[in-house]
View 1 (cartoon, one colour):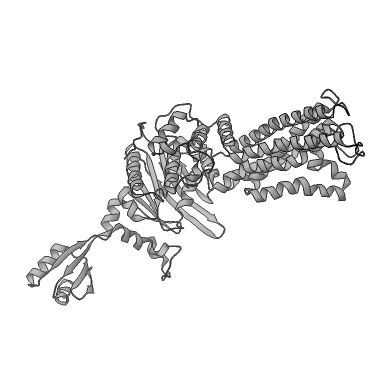
View 2: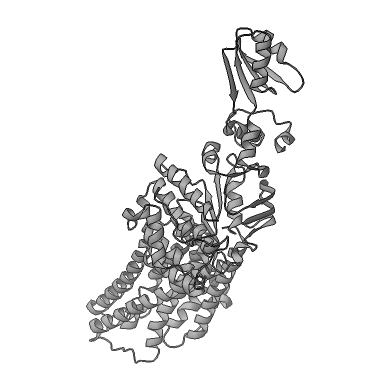
Length: 272
Length: 311
């Protein structure tokens, strides 16, 4: 028998150090450790970076090597900013899956019960996962976008010259990282709401990519639909039927906030 | 101390726990017994707030579990050994849990040693056997040095050595004044570990008794072998005496002590070749108690008298 508990207890409640308490900061630190030690999350982050870089590189090279400049509005990037942003929509899928897995991996393994036994108030866990996922995705995507932009600038310098100092460029670059971060937070909320990776993926991408079809039927609602509102921040110059950059981002953040609020409500009411 | 008051939990049409009231006291190992599906796990999940009661409440040290500022110091629970992320190491899993309640690294290493996982603490949990996973779960339960230890079927998957180890561990924890509440569907296991028994069937309380009382109520049968069983049976019969003859030369008698039987036989000059007080095993007593409350049974029994089992 190898067992001795070496902390003698003085009665049922025992004596304990006053420092032992659950706090938001501690839950955040614990969730950060869990995030770091999850392979699937690390790989998705790497894949997201590669997808931004690869799209930017291929756009920049295509634009430079093309004999004639591509016709306006053909969707191909004609400047470094366009090249840097060309990977955003595909990367949105990757960070969406990442946000979902941050939550649903706990449900598939049953770990969530252990987590909620340690933190029975539950909301600090929801909060920590949302904050961390958003922050990590923002920082990593900001770095990827900056590298993409500077790289594309170097490749395309002979054609067009756009720099971070040009009006709206820095906002669009930073905004793309923000757009992806808010997408990841929205994904975290869907993870809590639906608890299964498949359900949450369907829900999230339904909202992001299927709901915009409503815009076809109801043009007035079009600018307020999540992807349209969110991507306004990556727009240079004003265009018709699009919200202003920060108003659009505000609407997109509101979607994420509502989804998180619904998740918080459901989470505190149902059985884990 | 755990106070379960009129706890009821309904899942759709199923009453998993039905008006259960039990107090689990510190300083003893309380065995929580019942057939599969009797509501043991639901009760345990309700204690730590994972399941919301449909009715009633559960208090730990006088408060709802979720209202304690450092929950892991109040209750250490092992509810499902496989509830870990397979890609994480045992140490990282415990570290992350410890951090939420402000428990230091030193304590993590301590509990890893305590459960004998030091050699594999940095390996991925996905490769662990069920026995190792149980040890990891127990380590997690002990992290907070809790006043209440709650273990759901902890011996599952453990080898005989591990089972012996758990017994010692539980007795040690209780001796330190902790409340130890352990569920099992195996009476034989509880017979060796528990001081007190809470037995449930179909979500209802069947018995809340000390081990001694349970044993006492289970004894009282005497087995007699003799060439003249028919004669002997006649002499011994009377009020409150039940006699059966499982074999032609064997009687099984309840309601008479072995001294009684020996004196009667001597007086009638009947030869006895065997006289054995039979202590019906604890397991038999448990099976008799729960026979009517087993949810899943291979052979269907007459269930027209559900009230009998509630005695």
